[in-house]
Image (cartoon, rainbow, N blue to C red):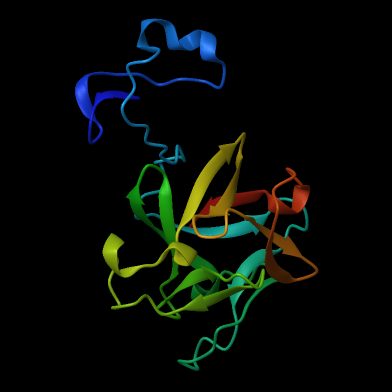
Length: 179
């Protein structure tokens, strides 16, 4: 929280939801900025992504076909089609890229998860839209991935990838295994 206009001032404060924590800051606030607080430990690392419920791995289908968009979950094979790189955009927000398919995981408003080309084929924060960015929340030894655009969590169900409201369901937990 900031005293001066434009997220500036001589004092900032991180706060929780109760107003008792406001202290002397009450009636002095000019602006409020809410930023994601995801894990920053994944930057530019490549992993196999295993669903914590099914034990299946995120996988690209038809990688050899440049327009293929399907993503699925399959048993572990160890191929490049099951490897995903986390491109960090700050504050624990990532694009999840498939190096073999040269595409990023993308959430749509139809609750489907697909892979799409980044706008200008770059890892620049400006070229990847909100549906291609996920907050990585560390939950014990697992992670949850929440779409910046839809605010829904990525889940693995019956071999497919979807997004849904986060109820901490087992299908929303993902284990990242080093390559």
